[in-house]
Image 1 (tube, one colour):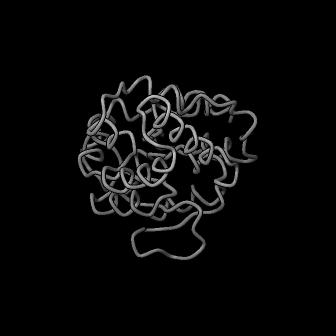
Image 2: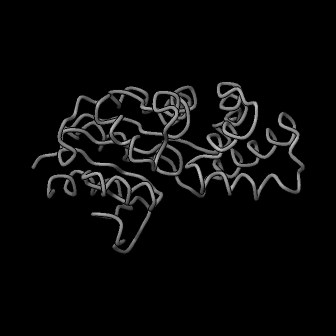
Length: 211
């Protein structure tokens, strides 16, 4: 069965995890929790991680327990000088341009952050759309409902004709359970929750063609 739509994670997938950007976003989340919500600094990191594991994103956890403006939170935590962290990935754009399938960003961040990242990576015209946390709200990866939503938004009725590329095993495993061909980015050895692993973008077309 040929792949007709590919959903790409954004952060730590379209740019290297070692860039440090996601670490700085975590620091901004901690800062927001302390400055805007009055959470003691010594509790911020552990509470952030607790909500991430329990709710899928720290944002959803904070929304359930505090008086939180979602838009303000997303703007605050992503307010970083992206060019200090990331730059275009050699060889990625040609790969995206040769894929016959439609391509979507599927992210637990918001569209504004995704567009800024794509602009810096010089990939802003390589995707057919951005499916973000706002569009999925109140759901997010890895919740089953989020995968149903992205299939609907992409106009796909057959999960097996879709692929997901993500750096987090829990997201890849959830996609696989939904019938989506799942690729764990950054893994060098087979993973029980993924259909395939990927480290070299140049191998993606052949990987999708084999499905």
